Length: 127
Image (cartoon, rainbow, N blue to C red; front, side, top):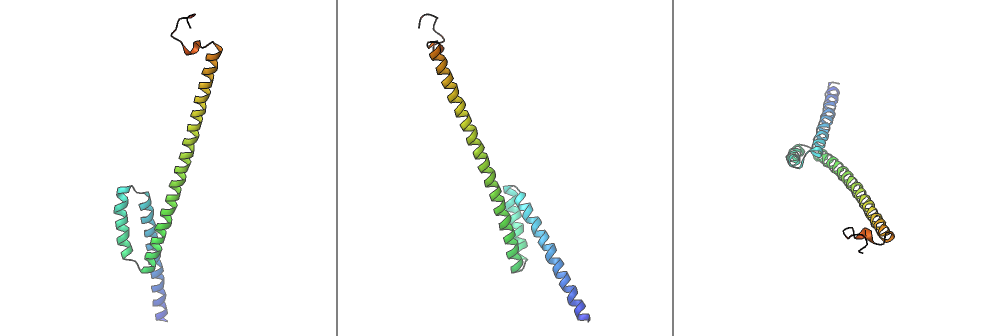
């Protein structure tokens, strides 16, 4: 009976340790993802040290978590970049349309006034 209590306590402590380690790893990964480029290098080195203390299975899980979060972050950045590029292209197209409309209006005004709109510095009657 005493052996079962000891084994039960050991299993509970093992599970708690894994949960605490898991939370610490999640916190480290979040910190890495939020850090600047210079700080990321330092945090990744700390993460690698932490990985070296884990079992093979824990290490594989931690690396998998890092990969998933990194992929998600990259996808989000790509989506934001694509959205910005699309908006820039729309603005550029609108500007080109406005320029073409302005040129067309100027040509129409010039044609209607006998070309005097295109020669503003010439005295009237000397075209």
